[in-house]
Image (cartoon, rainbow, N blue to C red; front, side, top):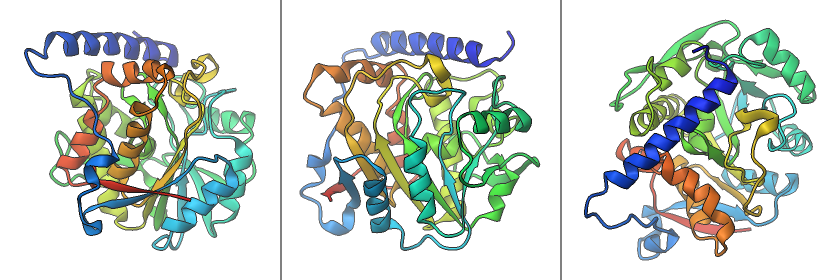
Length: 329
């Protein structure tokens, strides 16, 4: 089967169904796993908790305000990684927010990579046409794998010893993950981890290493994604920050294009931290702890794809802490 974006989404849907059946038949007599919330960290001393800043208000001013709480280590040439979307994608972060944010960060550039599946972003030429169509024209956009890739080592990874990143990534000193948090057809949810782990990997080599030649699904795919994130965390060290914007919470990724499902869950806010695991876990906790039934579609997507394996795998590779203090501004 030709790997187009449409077939990619179909494959992901089949994988999700298999994952759901596996979850239902493989639990045995184990009790259902209930996601923990920030409450479990209340008894820990501050030194054992990450700080995650939160704003209920979602706009450019509050993205900037949260960033200023966590940006002390951001220096030099700065890569801003976000998902710029397929043509006419309805759920991507609004350009005016990103434009205002990028203008506050000296020496910064939006970065992207080409896709593995066919379609409007599968080559640099097509990708640049899509960027223009989606109006990403207010600052340079660096397609990191335009000139090939470079291997980043993975220390003590689950499956990978190296991951091919877009070669231009070596030109940057710091990395900002500005992430539209949402569901995902294969990962369950797409947070800051997915934004950098898949989003910085080169289109034809790195992304294939993560997906595997046989397009592994479930835990193996998620662990490969965590391996890729680990390579980036080791490379940039403290010069990374993570911002999750929980708006337009579709069950679909921004790669789904114009056909992405409309959100069922109301907008929840913005989360920001220097701790990758904490900021993604805080976003997942916020969804699970939402009081209304509107959360059920997104929770079903997460559960059917074993999405929370992202969090436990990051913990195992010591990529942050699941214990955090939520600080509202």
